Image (cartoon, rainbow, N blue to C red; front, side):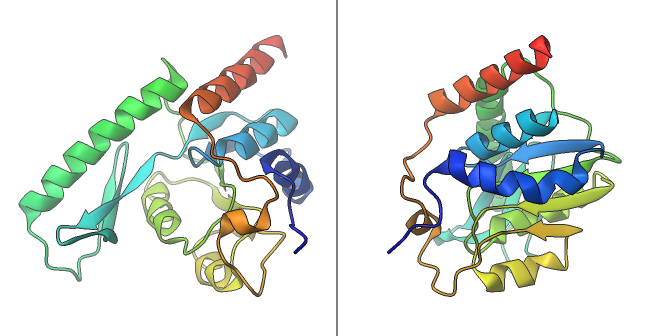
Length: 213
């Protein structure tokens, strides 16, 4: 079967024209680590937008870690109030997850501080989206920052995910919504994992470009 994208670089190049309408806006590109970083760096470089990382991780149910009952970011968290879980478990989970996210953010961004997101056009970038559940939690938390707009930009996602999330954001850019979605990587010829070292390398290269410009 013919793959839609050669690799993440090819996906970024095909995504960029759809974002041209925002080229004069006050945007911040929010990359979802690790796979979204190569695309986000390419987009940030093309438009000279600042880059930041969307650090978020789900809170797993105490009896089934794969079942998400909420999510944690660097500064916030959301919990599904319909699920009866003890406050002690939630508090402990939030503390542990946030500490892990902080360590990873510092590793990736070094001494850079997170960008102010108020009144900015936020462009969330990943290499693809399946259920979109974690991104939905991100949207809930990002809205508390009072951004001007929230945009999702991904190369591939099932149509039901796009239609479900579109009503919660200002724009959802997704050039390819296959009828048969078997996973994000299925639609790439090369979907090699992106290591932490590669993330650090690409972010540093982008910073160097910004300094030179």
